[in-house]
Image 1 (cartoon, rainbow, N blue to C red):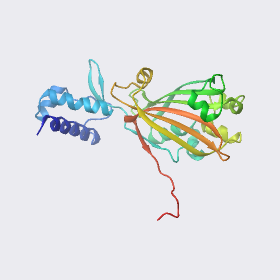
Image 2: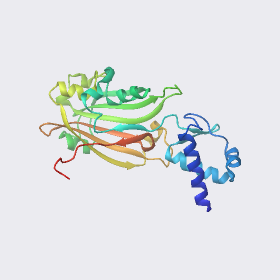
Image 3: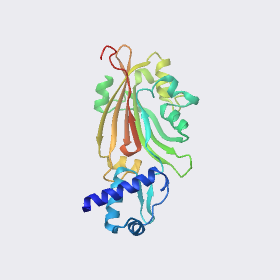
Image 4: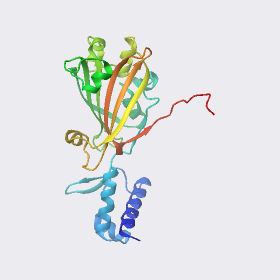
Length: 262
């Protein structure tokens, strides 16, 4: 077996051991020299294999302590259904993510900022507002998950929503607590119910600030999602940008197709 094949095989063995629970979520792996002895390879091969799994997001390194399995498995994100009113208001939740995490047995903690602000140019263009003035209400959220075992907080996404002030001013959308169902439910109550959702997705390296907030390694990547809510009369009333570690999310899309096809 070649050296390249060998370290990939070791990475796969460790990956399987995480999947079957041999190495528990949040638990520490054996030392590299011990793993090497167990698997009959040298430490350099083990080190290279573990670096692959750190880049994947399966493992994390604590300097001076060792290598650990990530506390949280990838979270499913069912994009086609998560923004229905029934979905986002389940259990009096404040939005889709909070409802989803409760079902999974997790708790959401969010550091929020709310207030008037200037939208990025691409957001201003979508919403048809001025980019150089405080033309939108900006709702910034640094969102973390507390696993059911209570091992601490895991940062999972940075979400920033932009709503035109002509819609949001003087409403709960501009307040810290927007109420059950979040801003999408408030928009519906104001007569701006979203009938169509568009998401534009790219993958890129995180910025230095994003890397710090999301606790990411240098060679990991984020999903950069621009989420647009359109009303029945084709008016964009909300843009949310999501920055999400790719290793932490399982994006799922299911939607109807033309019933005349086939």
